[in-house]
Length: 117
Image 1 (cartoon, rainbow, N blue to C red):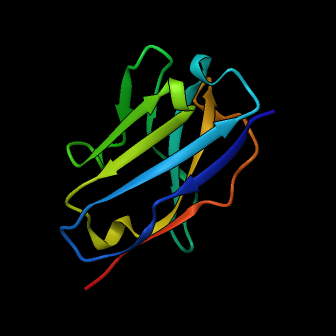
Image 2: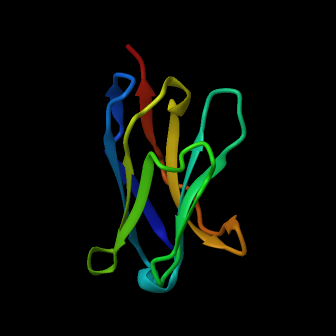
C-alpha cells in the first residue's frame, strides 16, 4: 500500500512556473513507475507525465516541452516542474504509481494549480 502526499500548488500568472512534489511511503518507491495526473473541473483525470524506475519519461502532448518530471529515490519523492503555464493547465494535480498505463494506488488529496491573471 502506497501513501501519496502532493504539495506545491498555488496561484500563478500565465507564463509562470511552479514545482510540484509528491512524497510516497509504504512501498518500494524506487521500483515503481510514477505519474502525475490532473483533473480540471468537469473533465476526466488525465495522465500528464510519467517516469519509470530507470528514469525514462513520457509526456502528454499538451505539456511536452513545458513540464519536466523527475524523481529522487533517496527521498521517495517525485517532482513536476511546470514552466510556461497556461490557463488550461488549471486543475487539481495528483501523483500515483503507474502499472500497465493505469493508476495503481489510492489517490492522495492532490494539489490545486490555478493559472490566471
